[in-house]
Length: 422
Image (tube, rainbow, N blue to C red):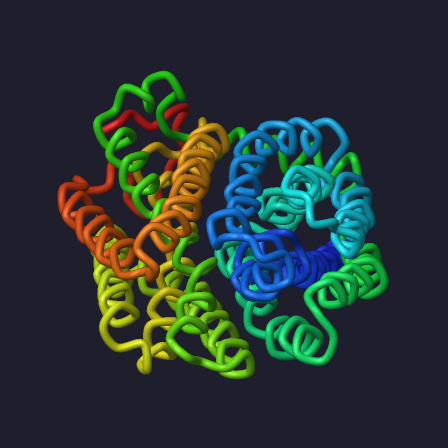
């Protein structure tokens, strides 16, 4: 009886923690500082009379700060636990958004203020929330992580149409960021504080023991010498060059094509819907279809979106959906592939390296997109180049070998001391 009550309480805590992670990610820097950044670019450009490259460079800085902050986030979460780090970071992130309200027409201050958002929000990138969810689940871990990650798609869908677009239309971009700061502090923080749970010391020890027993795979230094590791880094660098650049510039390119602010706000919501759908659907599909083939298909879809944006901007909603699929699929596929090729022994370190390489590409891509726009007066050159890069990533994905570890390898590891690489 006591065991049943304990199991029921653990299930409730797991569900609440997943809900808290979903809400936290919906109001986190992944959405506000990255995926919805395109909505701020035209009004900031108009107010300060800066070039597109000048305004967009702030989001290149955001991408680079993510690369620098990722190791620190991992250290803080390991040292203090995800709950403490997340609850400390939420009000600090809200403060960084509120500070943007006071941005003067000074490039250095503008870049510094945007660069602070991923620094003060260091605990709010997805891995902290996913680490909070993981201890509560075993058999339904994939579903719970998918639900938590769906918060990014949910925020990308709802915030543009409910908050950012209306606030920019009726007031300006400063008030939009101020409203987001208020939502982060007064809505996100209380919900996350109530929902996010951590196992007791006894439960945590049992979780660690179970994880150690079920661990399998190859060590980090061996993984780094693997041809597949190099291939994955190249593929995700190319995806970073294009995917985040497209999401940050698609509003601006359609405003250039004559779309109204209301239409581009709806487009940003369409992008969010594509991302949300991909988060949910891709996790299911890759359990049944070879994951590199799925990512290859999505990359080709992204290349088609680039060509449509360049030649048929009136089909922008279709393009936005395809870009949403691209960004929504990337990290689900990455998380899946790391386990299938390298196991769980060095999972976090391998994920961290490829995650950093992706954002390194993002920073370069965002800046390159904006500079090509300023050089040619439109985005055509950047879009054609992005289509070529995405096609190249699709070709590289064809070269990915069969999985080293089949489904069920973690279960086999419970009975065997180690699993040797194929």
